[in-house]
Every structure is written in C-alpha cells, then in structure tokens.
Amino acid sequence: MNILVTGGLGYIGSHLSLALDKKGYKVKIIDKEIENKKSLEKKILKFSSNITIHYCNIGHSDELDNFFDQNNIDFIFHFAGLKSVPESHKFPEKYYETNVKGTEKLLNAFSKKNKNLKRFVFSSSASVYGKPIYLPLDENHSLQPLSPYGESKVLAEEILKKTFKHKDSWSVLCLRYFNPVGDKLNHFYKEKKPAYLKNLFENILDVIEGKKQKLKIYGQDYKTPDKTCIRDFIHIDDLISGHISAMTYMLKQDSPLWDVFNLGTGSGYSVLETLRTFENIYSTSIQYEYFGRRKGDIAISYSNPSKAKDILKWKSSYGLEEMVKSIKG
Ligand SMILES: NC(=O)c1ccc[n+]([C@@H]2O[C@H](COP(=O)([O-])OP(=O)(O)OC[C@H]3O[C@@H](n4cnc5c(N)ncnc54)[C@H](O)[C@@H]3O)[C@@H](O)[C@H]2O)c1
Image (cartoon, rainbow, N blue to C red; front, side, top):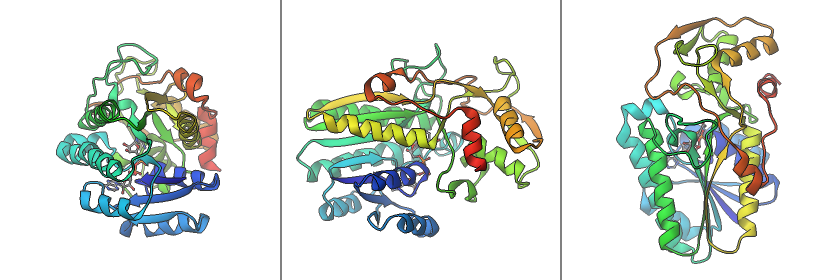
C-alpha cells in the first residue's frame, strides 16, 4: 500500500513516516520546504532507503496533479499546514489559503486520480473547540475557535465532511490533537525558530540550556489552582500510535466512513506544574517571568479520549514525568 504523508518533513509527519516505514508500508512524503530541511531529509533517508521525498506545494494544483500523475496513492495522512495561533492572528489569509484551500486542492487532485475507496486522515486540533463549555472536551463539544488557526481547522473539517457526504468512496478521519510534545528524532527541539513556534517544553528547555534567561509565562490570573493555563500534553510516541490505530481501523472498513477523534491523554497540567516537573527531573531551578494573557489562550483544555479508546482501541501511555524524562534521555 502506498501512503502519502503531506508535510512529512514537519514534526509529526516525519515521526509518522518513519513509524509507517518500519511497519513495511511504502511511504511518499511531499513537502514544500525540502531546500530548507536538508539535514532532516538526510536523517530520514539514513533511517530508511524506502521513503521517497518529493517537492510539492499543496497550494499549487499543477504540482499536486503532477505528483498524483506519477505516484499511485492509496492512503493519505495530511499534515501539511501552518500551526501557530499567534501567527494566525497576524496573517489570517495565509492560514486560510494553506490550511483550507490547500486541503481542498489536495482532495481534488487525489479524487481525480484514485477511483477506489480514498482513505484520508486529517490533522485537526483541539483549538477547534474554543473556550470549553464543559470539561473534559469530547468530540460533541461545540466548535467555536478563538483564532484564525482554529477556524481554518474547522473549515477544513467541514470540507472533508462535505466531500464524504456528496461523493461516495471516501473514508475520512479527523484527528484532533491536544498538545504534542517530545522529539524522538532529536531534531525539532534543536531547530532555530521563533519562540511563538515553540511549545512549552521547548521554551522550558531553552532556559535549562541557557539559551534564554527566563521562561515567559503568559497569564497569572486564570481560574486554575495555580492561576496558570492547564493543557493536555501528549507524547509524540502516543500521537503516532494513535495514527497507526486510526489507519488499522480504517483498513478494516471497506465502506465509506467519516469520524472525528480526540487524541489526548485526558489529563491536564498547568504551566507551573510542568515547569516544576522539569526542575525535578533536571535537578535545576528554572527562572520565569509573568506576562499578560495571549490573545486566543484559554484557561483550561484537556480531552476526553474515550471515543478513541472505545473505537480505535488506542490509549496514551506517557504521563507528564515520562514525557519530560524522554526528552532528557
Ligand atoms: N504540533 C502541534 O502542536 C499540533 C497540534 C495540533 C494540530 N497540529 C497539526 O498537525 C499538522 C502537523 O503539525 P506539525 O507540528 O508537524 O507542523 P510542522 O510545521 O512541523 O510541519 C508542517 C509541514 O508542512 C509543510 N508545509 C506547510 N505548508 C505547506 C504547503 N503549502 N505545501 C506543502 N507542505 C507544506 C511544512 O514545510 C512542514 O514541513 C499541522 O496541520 C498542524 O496544524 C499540530
């Protein structure tokens, strides 16, 4: 079976590509940043000589058509996209073009070439829910995103649902990730990038490694026990096993399918609790400084992962301590 991983030179896509390759699947990556990601490309090709990496921008239909003309694809994991909430407030059109229009173009190109059951897994996000009306967040929670990024994920999910409804022969799952952390490739946490593109773990590590003096904590007046935000961190290994479970489930169904699943642990940890866990495991003290709340941040977000447990037969295995330990090595 030929699997296309869009955005396969990104954080989650590269981890999944190697996991799929290890299981014996034929993996083809498309990404638009090959030139800037030579060291990662090398690393992936060192681990596997079977994975192929192709330049293709999902915003360009001609490049997509060209790719599908030359490659038979049975299954797509669609990761290519933009993912920063703060950046999306600055450049909402860019997020719409890439995350919404790009997804639409990819669906059209795939549909032109593959007349069989088209299996498609979409990387969605917990940001689709917005401010929780109740917790933990389950898949039936209303969708009221607070950022152009979250809106782009809702719109892409809607397009996928319409595609599934109006054309037969589509099998689509949307996976709503909570807060992925960890770096098994030992690559992404070393990348030079602006702080807004780094997750909490990466920003804490920057302080531990002396690259920054203090951790910036946004908001000290949330209605949480220690007044800082609470999030559901999920280790990259668990996230990847969630994708494999989703694929296994889809491959068992011969008829069209549509569904949405949370991928989270079901436990929330505050920024300060996370920082203290790093302090314990690294036996160090971490300086921090409070700043005002960030636009679009909510106080508490954590998942109800029971639907994925019941239907996909998947559950996470890493707790916060194991996640931090996995980074320290
Ligand atoms: N990492 C997270 O915290 C998180 C959380 C929830 C959802 N997601 C979603 O998961 C997906 C993957 O996230 P990630 O963390 O691996 O992101 P990433 O930024 O590391 O990877 C995205 C990849 O997509 C590629 N890409 C972007 N625009 C493209 C285009 N027009 N054509 C082709 N390739 C393009 C980039 O070059 C990059 O390699 C994204 O859709 C993101 O929104 C991520």
